[in-house]
Amino acid sequence: MRPTRKRLCSALLAAYSLFSLYAAYSVFLRPRRLPASRGGTRQQQRHGRERSSLGNEEWNPWEEDEKNEQIASQHRYETNLQMLKNMKTQKEQIDLKVQIWGKAAIGLYLWQHVLEGLLELADVTAQWREGSIKGGKTHFSFVTGPAVVPGYFSIEADNVVLVLNGREEAKITYATQWLHYAQTLIQTHKLRHIAIVLLGSEQCNNEWIRPYLKRHGGFVELLFVVYDSTWVNEEDIFQWPLGVATYRNFPVVEPNWSMLRSPRSYLCNFLGTVYKNSSRENLMEVLKQDGLDKLCWIAAREQWQPQETNESFKIYQDALLQSDLTLCPVGLNTECYRIYEACSYGSVPVVEDVMTPGKCGNSSIYHRAPLLLLKTMGAPFIFIKNWEELPAILEKEKNMSLQEKIQRRKKLIKWYQNFKAQMRQKFINILENSFLPNNKGG
Image 1 (cartoon, one colour):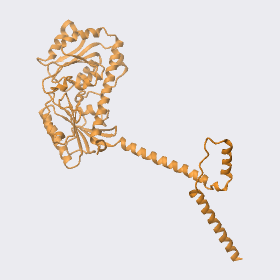
Image 2 (spheres, rainbow, N blue to C red):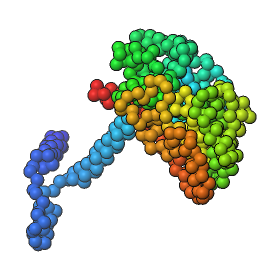
Image 3 (cartoon, rainbow, N blue to C red):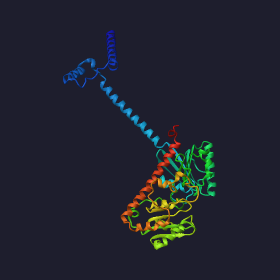
Image 4 (cartoon, helix red, strand yellow):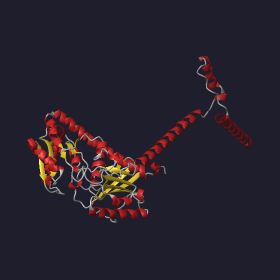
């Protein structure tokens, strides 16, 4: 009995092995027939299907499992591919970390007005203020305030934009201390890249910073400089806008219905200092002719005041908001805060388009200077060469309808918003192209 049972088991095992080998051969080794061509007759196609379903040589016992496995495998492949794409996208979105050290007031214009960043502390008198945003492939962090001093704050990125004031000797001395601190960090490999945003001299006397530039043997790779410096080459030196007077706490202004559509009480405004023997004296004389000063909001003073009181600042904002034109005579430089502040309220700047003394714009390529940056960006201002042209401008202003003025305000505010957006994108692109290894071919 036992031998019979043993032989039976052996026979069954042998049969199973042979069947398995044949099945494996059919699935993996046996050549498959090509499907019938579309040009065949329906009868040929029907006979082909019958042979496929009835002929033992074509039958695949794991055909359904294979299909399911192929579907599952394809699904896993697509899932993994999507994960890789997501990881790549996330890496591309934040490929660069940049910390901005705001050691000049124009740093707030860069951060709040151009990059549209927020600050954690709303108190403008705080000793320390910071914020963070993401733009392009870059994550920006920003620190500012009196408490931000060399060696006493956290360095959160190995790429830094240092915002400095180089208008006068005292400011330059302070700025060079920061440059020496940054140079030490570069030399000790705690920083990799440095860019500078510089409030330059109003006469464009910026020679003091030249030795720090990489093109002159220094370590500063990029320079964004205010005013029409002839150094600007759009390669490593770029012109930067002066912006609004953030040192006087000029805010980010959001346009509203009233600002755009309400009638304004005055044709023009000028609130500022009238310097002796300047074109501003000429402006005041012209305004007194035919009582034009009665049509405009004029508040002249003989001495410049660096700070505003809450009351004086409110008066200034009201003047911008209640005037269709803002008169912008030259000071030490043609570019002034008033130009950008007027744009914020939809009051068209009337700009005295003349060069001031100094080294700004003194080259053949600067035939459009001053205000080359604003002109290049298509600023919709009224440019004049002499204030004697003002009476004709104001006469034309009297005859404009409210609807025409509304459309002009919209155009100006839209331009200013686009101007800041383009400066933001340009700033980010320059940093990424210079600081990211992949973008430099490295």
